[in-house]
Image 1 (cartoon, rainbow, N blue to C red):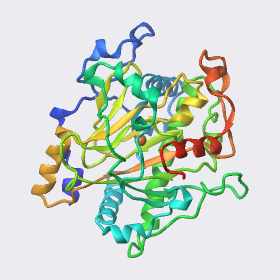
Image 2: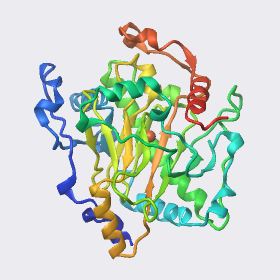
Image 3: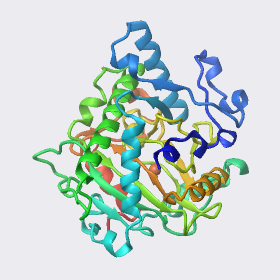
Length: 386
Ligand SMILES: [Fe+2]
């Protein structure tokens, strides 16, 4: 199984637009579409030299790349030597086994009264924002047809499991978000694998947050100090490609994440597309051993709208179909698991544009608000809080 899981052939390159982010002048940074067209290549930011403490010039150049890329694309591909392919495979194997269990079994881990912020969220609960948000619907009408998202007609058919990562505060105004974890019966390895993979991905996010702060000219800990005791959640999704493997099926409708930064390990089935700041839609392939980071709404808030939350969707594509065929041939699970971690600003910390971002022309759109209050408001809008 592992050979299939780690095989580059599971995500054939011929379908994969990568995004190459070169070192370029201010003038060159404007028009991504004109410069690179639809076939683009990701530059991978290897965190090793930063972690090992390379020279100031190299650190500053890397941090500038991180901040510029997050601003222009809302996404970043990184390689962290602490997050191995084996770690990722162990996690995906366990989650595939869990999502394959019967619905009756999985429902036992549902915690609706806690807004699904721990345990399982069944398929058909989470509503894609595009279905309710009239402003978003208007914006989509004005998009060029080739970049328009697939409009879902129903709630997302994906399952999700929420597992908190890291410590929570003893005293908080937002207790229900910071609820106790749920462990399914018959999975003795659950806690160890979830904690281990979640903490590794969180460590990677924290390094990126530090690098982004340096790149933006903020104090090094401008973001990470606010992430301490945050409601970080490992939230893998499970999508049943056996039942919902038809091209065009929307597993996660066009939306942004409400997190600070979201990080994903590499999924065994492609299907994720993101929108760059210039409006261009790009299907994502995460290279083997790498992690994808996306900006969430809390990041947008702290940067006064200069870095907007990255829009994205998960839809069955041609590349997904190729991977389904391969998995079928090798008798592999047809559950598409995303290993997603949502990092958050601490619930009691105040979200507001930091440093020079307070002078941004858009800063007035981001009034000071407790992060926990913001999250509760957003969750109620996407049907996860009654
Ligand atoms: Fe998302």
